[in-house]
Image 1 (tube, rainbow, N blue to C red):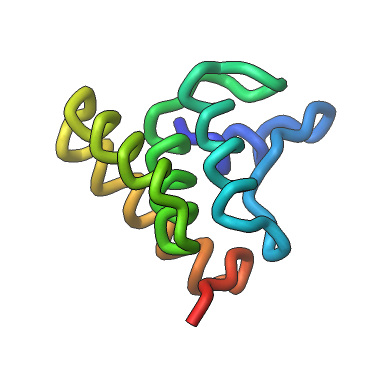
Image 2 (cartoon, rainbow, N blue to C red):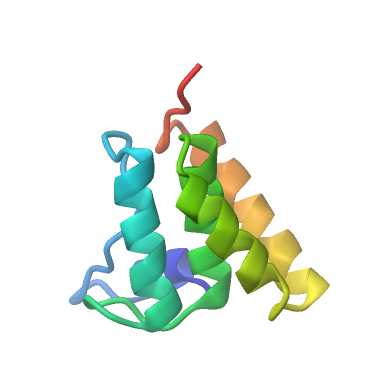
Length: 99
């Protein structure tokens, strides 16, 4: 279960999720929180990979490095799930990419 699903399940406790106003650096920091399970975020490799992917698309070089390293520890299915989740965020306009 990824962070988006957890957030929908838990009405009482809201998880920090990507927002349209977040920069690549902000997204990178959020991805770090999910990769480490800190700042109120559960440790979630799929969500961390997804957020690093969004951060990389917004220009974060650090996110590219962490996304690649995280990919080495993940199953193919997890990576595919993270990529689909990133596309959903983009398609829904939750994250706006820089042209």
